[in-house]
Image 1 (cartoon, helix red, strand yellow):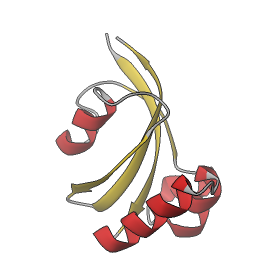
Image 2 (cartoon, one colour; image 1 turned 90 degrees about the vertical axis):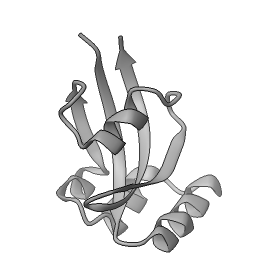
Image 3 (cartoon, helix red, strand yellow; image 1 turned 45 degrees about the vertical axis):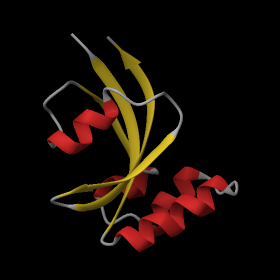
Length: 93
C-alpha cells in the first residue's frame, strides 16, 4: 500500500502562503517557518505530519502528496482548513 511522509505549513490566507513560499525559495528553513507561522499543531514539530496512507488527509492535500515530486514545495493548496505549503519528504508506492 502507498505511504507518504510530508510536512506542511498551514495559514489562513493565500497571500500569507505566497509570502512564506517566497521566503522558503530564498533559503529560509522550512521547519523554522512552520514553527513561526503555521496554525496547525504540527507547526510545533516543524510541520512534520509523519507517515500516512491515501485517504487519511483531505482530498486536496492527498492529491498533492501522492503525485508531487519529492522535496519540492507545493502550493498554496486550498482546503477547508486554509492554505497549505506542502513538501513531500518520502513516498513508497
